[in-house]
Length: 101
Image (cartoon, rainbow, N blue to C red; front, side, top):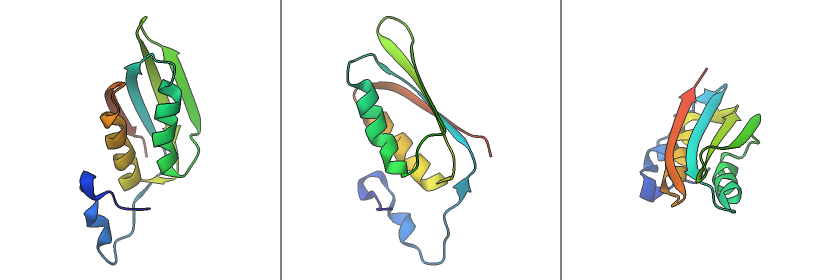
């Protein structure tokens, strides 16, 4: 994985540290219901380099959607990076994550 120096990921350069793998995590977000919202969210989730175990996109109100992505086997650092990148998307209102294991 490449460090994102603009997001403060330069601490991954320390020798001897092994990434902590999370068994299961859920990324929840609320975004604008534009026609390209699925593509924008999926492009950021692609940075995890693992397919979501479960992915749900539901219409919230008339103008927004709720996305829940269940991912497994990813490092805690990569999940944090992806959540920060999702927060920067202009169509995303809020991002929440839950580490279940």
